[in-house]
Structures are given as C-alpha cells and as structure tokens.
Amino acid sequence: MDIKDIQNLIKFVAKSGASEVKLEMEDVKITIRTGEVGKSETMVYQPMQTMPVEQIAQPAVASAPTEAAATSAPTPAANEEESKYIMIKSPIIGTFYRKPSPDKPVFAEVGDTISVGDVLCVIEAMKLFNEIESEVSGKIVKVLVDDSSPVEFDQPLFLIDPS
Image (cartoon, rainbow, N blue to C red; front, side, top):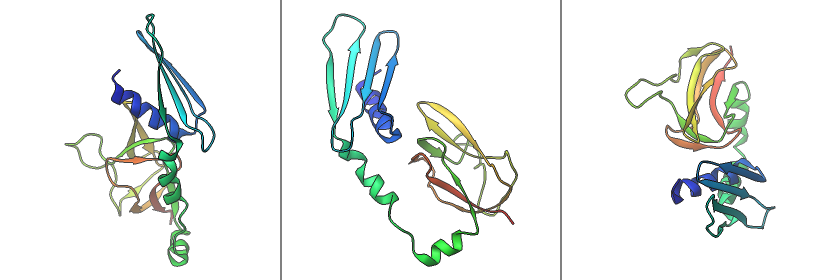
C-alpha cells in the first residue's frame, strides 16, 4: 500500500462519516480516526515491524465544499417538476460508472424502460465494483451524475418516471 492509497482511504473515511476505521494487512496496520467538526482527522500508519509510528493529519475542512454544494436549494419550479419522479440514490460512497467496462455499452440510457432488479450502474468503492439495481419500474427521465464521477452516500443518481 503506497501513500496515494492511504490518502484515498483517508478521504473515503472522512466522507463516510465513520469515526474510526482499522485496517490490518500482512505488513501494515492502519487506524484512521475522524474528530468532530473543526478538529483534524488523524491517521496512524503502523508497520507490523518495530518501526516508529507515522502520523498524517488531514484538515476536516476538505469535505466542506461538498456539503455546501449539497445543501443549495433547487428552484421551486424544478422542485415541483421533479416531485412526480422517483429518485434513485447512491447506497455507498465511490466512483459512479454507467458502463460495466469501457468497451461495453451503458447499462441504461435516458428514455429506457426499466424493471425492478435491472442494473442501472456500478459504483466502485475500494476496488470493488458494486452493481446498483433499480428498486422501481419505470422510465429513466434523467441521469444526474456524469460517468466516472465520485458520488456521496445518498446522492441522487437517476430520476425515474414510475407511470
């Protein structure tokens, strides 16, 4: 595990809202603790050998822009129009992909009719690809996330017209 993987893990834990995560592998033991708002996050990297503990601090402010963007209110007209649609939301934090692989077609396009259990996208989290299945039947009205974009927990992904 290199420093870039560790930094990505810190960002992932900070966005997840978990207060502490411990990861143990063959030669590495990592503990990540996140504090309250205003306090910094602490990451402890401890090799299993007798090497000293290295600490890396990340400020909690890093996730503030995403929270500010998520709280901005849509216009009343857009809100009324979207109220008749069902919103499919992300069940996990990760990277959103519309295709199973770069050379394959997208799972679902705008205008496609979907059924319960149809795969709409995949979300990559910690090098695992999780298929996101539809919980409703209907027609896809809008895809709310760009391909290969990071997504938050409970972030809207698709608008579905159930009629």
